Image (cartoon, rainbow, N blue to C red):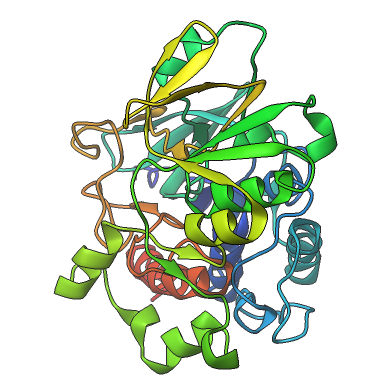
Length: 357
């Protein structure tokens, strides 16, 4: 009588211990699945603690809860980054989530029997299914033109910005006018002369139109339920929005000079698309992040850019999923208060595949 084939020690491995990975852990635990969560950071909420000091959510406390544990903030307040990190630690403690920190996944392959092998440091972890919950803010993007600036110009990405006192005195150029760039430009305007380079115009929405939080309106109008594959979702996902002060408000209320797209560098001066140029002491690149799926070697699972292909978090490779990506399913897929919805859906898929549905 032949022995039954050995089964992987884990039903599921979750790669990424931010809000997406923790929400997934909660739902997997409720379904009795064997799982572990890997996180590269040294502590829970490390990515949040590493952002600039004054960062506040653009969603109010009313909309910042993960499944099973209310966020400890008043409904109409806007928590700071450390409050979010503390909440994530409390979440891990509350549900006793099996989180391995200081552990980076370096490769992911699929075996002939359909199981997956994840290498993380000296470990090789075999698992039946994998959730890639590494988040949307992985690799900072800095335009190639940055290399043309002379060493005398102090440069940093928004990922490395912490507070105004960290920057030398002088004139600052913030490149990028999405939420991060606008928040940083507003803060720096109190201590520095600030220019803001706007690559493309984004709609700017007030934080509290008619005295109500913008997400209060969005939920009442069910805009938070618009899916990425709908006609409206395709339009919205292709153009983000600023919430709060946009370039016009910064120019009127904070003395920020709004510039068009950066066109190039000549000596110590930055030139812009309208033909003007100016010299700067500091450049802050608020130019966003890109997703890094280069460690994943699973045939037919990635697109021409090397990113995982997915539809509502389900990739073409059976048992491989994504979670927490911008517009993965709805506008809220990467946000604290909504990522749990996607996690619940995927947990159902995972449980059914594992025979626990």
